Amino acid sequence: MSVSGQDGRDPTELHNKYNYHAHATRIIVLTTAITSKWSSPGNLNQETTMARTNLRMVFTIRG
Image (tube, rainbow, N blue to C red; front, side, top):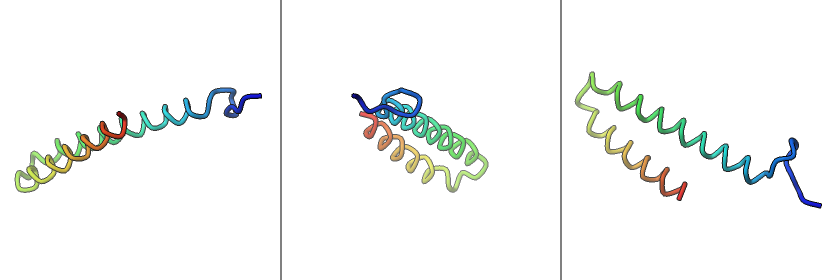
């Protein structure tokens, strides 16, 4: 007997799907943060660097 989620799907499949959505949301948030910083150029460079680092981490996690 195989272990499955409540709706009959494989728990790992559900977990992967959740991770994908979490990363997609994070990328959208970062993009919004960068765009909103155009009005204040002082912070823009730091924000962009942080966003690039975060994106690199996201894609490293996803493999």
